[in-house]
Amino acid sequence: MIDHAHPSVPLWQQLQAVAQALAQVRRGVSGTAALETVPSALRPGVQALLFQALRQLGRAQALRAKLASRAPAPLPDALLCTALALAWDPEHAPYEPHTLVNQAVEAAKNTRSLQMQANFLNACLRRFLRERDALVKATDSDIHAQWNHPEWWIKRLQTEHPNHWQEILRANNRAAPMTLRVNTSAISREALQTDWSNHGLTSQAVGHQGLVLDQAHGVRDIPGFAEGLCSVQDAAAQCAAQLLLNDLGSTHQALRVLDACAAPGGKTAHLLELLNHPSEVVALDIDPQRCERIVQNMQRIGRTAQVIAADAAQTKTWWDGKLFDAILLDAPCTASGIVRRHPDVRWLRREADIDKLAAIQKNLLKQLWPLVKPGGRLLYCTCSVFLAEGENQVKTFVEHNTNARLLPSLGHLRPQSLATSTALTDNLSGDHDGFYYALLEKIPTS
Image 1 (tube, rainbow, N blue to C red):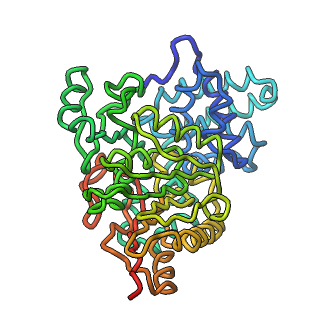
Image 2: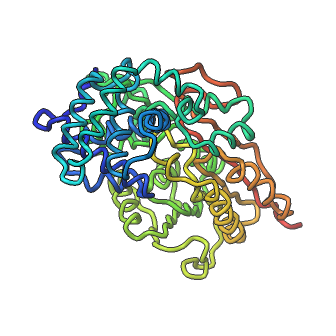
């Protein structure tokens, strides 16, 4: 059993906070925002339990439907589903199922708005313990219980990734490891890995500059992080700066590079690490507070970028008229490729969001393309596995822009957990999130 508890915090108190956070997610609040309201002493344990509950929420909701003919009010339903999500599979339960049930009932008794529901919750959960095997078997045919995703999401993957939809969903349902990018302009990957090993941190190489920790650690405890020798970044996201600069970064000319939609600055930092000669990097983000994160990231790695708080699509408000050699457009998207790290995303998104976000992506491409020098390039990427935000978006763009040439690109990368499968064919090797990459070159006019 995994002990998520803070030594001085009773489990019922954690379950109380998890249920409140889950109720917020169901109302459309992001998991990150919901956790910010949790007291700091509780937060690590609550986050671990909330994420596990979100990964098993489809099964929990199917079980609750068997136990209660009508759904309870939002908060008692959230507590009931939390307990069911954490207890239904004893092999992976963070605590013994009986302990979880006892503590969930205790949470109800200690929450004023739930006290009237304590007996109802106790009855449902005791029945679950008595009839667990039969109830689980009765929900096995429920598609939500099988895959712990909304039905529309599953069907869309079946249509768009007919040969890989099951692998994508399995990967989504596992927690992602902690992956870092080594600042190879300051230290070799091998040297940093050796230093980590000397401090008891074991890791595996991934991609060109990545290291995957065998066990996650607080960033402050990772040797070299504070000094800017490494940054937290998934292996798929590490491809962005490498793809954009590829042969450009090896030239000795000073380049002008734009990172649109740049916050929190991981890709901006990577661009600067790869540009070892005088070059200008402009980092844009629409959110001024998130721009502060970009500045902090640059300070940590000892590099500078021109950071501007502006809407990238409103070019008249920020562009100085000088064309860019390269533009990185990491466009707003459904985040359907990073569900391993953000398990709330699957329950927050609606299918209609895809078309709305695709329209924003289309407009960003339209507005930023004129800012690319003839012979320059734009890398379009999203952390999405849906074709409307990737392959279909770029296909339409190239069809409507005769001066755009699609260069060899990675296309759709599917999320991949090495804990459940070997490396999939036509995918990156190693453990990584889902992403889409298209590198576009602007054809000079003759």
